[in-house]
Length: 336
Ligand code: F6P
Image (tube, rainbow, N blue to C red):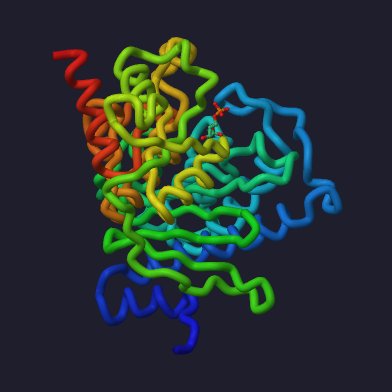
């Protein structure tokens, strides 16, 4: 069978399945094109003078890397003129970026983390881009931050790109999860796996164990049982993996199962958690649920959390369904 490009896949989703509107197709294509440009910059590494700090601090209080800034610019430049967006929000910008008046406006809101896992950039470990697409509320012509505050159930599309040994784009339009690999020679994303499914059971977990002493009781109990292995109540050994790039950890889980956790702990309790709801937790939760997995904030479905701020943080538990349900159950028991 001939390879199916992302372009053809999207046209078929639009034309044959009626799954997406033409504007949404254009939006996804533009994001994918920007991700190709980011992939090229990352691939240059030290030769492209793109490593190291940019010398500024973002809204999160984190030192921006040159590639954080560059990736943000690439995504903004690619998306502002096509006529498919009403506004853009990013991890790297305090407030939404409105579409300049000289360009037509569309009906969608795009939110992204341009370069996730940026502590890994300088050490040549996988990083990624995460994005989420929402509808601009009816009648709103100049969207503000409040218009982005929609629960994850309202997402019309979400995806991520992992810049690893190969560049892989994973996408959901609300009808399963599909994986595309960048063919660097022809410069096109090619469908390499349709309908990814996360196994309900797993023997692999991902958490930053160095935070153990700060965790709350339900997480102590759950991870304690995993670490006890065959001799503990679970009566089986578990393995641990932590890349410290959410995209890479989630991609592994999508490929072979596992549970990813970034709980709220004593270190990040004031902020509500470590990971951001709108451009990290929600798009990943949408993808994971579409692949048959589960995603919670420890108590309830992440996709149903009502956002209160553009850069709001949340606890995250996602991946293989039975494990996510178990750790969520431990949290519920603790407050019962
Ligand atoms: O943006 C947050 C992030 O970089 C995620 O990609 C990753 O999962 C996490 O932070 C890593 O956290 P830590 O520094 O605690 O390992």
